[in-house]
Image: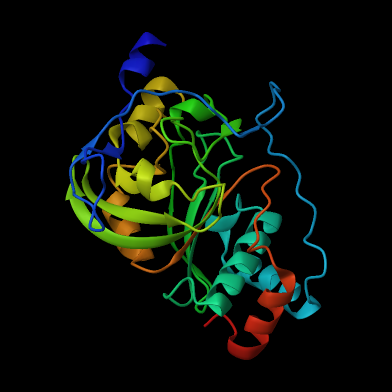
Length: 269
């Protein structure tokens, strides 16, 4: 376990105390102070918490999501239908509100699955195919194999759940990285201040998993495998929707009415 802890890497940027509008590309670690806002009940089980279907979702959208899930094929076998449904509803509501710009691209990570599972998917909704499927690390403050604590607080070292908009890329300490804007007030709205970004990390890949039987930890970033991070960062692009799903997550963007109206007017576009 000592070797495991030594392998953790940070993912927050070094900047002046008065952060400018354009963020710099240098990254650094902050000392972890665990200050979660939500905690999952302790259990030895690695099984995810069951999610009920969203209420008031139009049958047309529910059926379309089920058809999408089936069309995605074997790579999406571990992507739970209830998680995909929530991700799609949020995507549609955000599109209607003009909060995301890239059409038909949706990235979803089920952070209630253990880190030993490939729990991140980048989807092309229009073509109903998986663009990328990979491991993704959670924050050190969130737990070990399974994330149990989630926080939006600076220096918490926790993963923050909710919907994000992908932003621009930069070359930082971890190489190519993509900034994220948290779209859920109180849940992930400190993403920019915490320097939560998509980046590659040795502790998020297959080699590390083979050696330690679990992934390592970030300081809150959804860190990606070193052999795949560039492809994932390029696949999501700028202005797309990223959904980090977890137990008991409530988001204003899980709005079935808005999602239904958007889908009726534009489909996945």
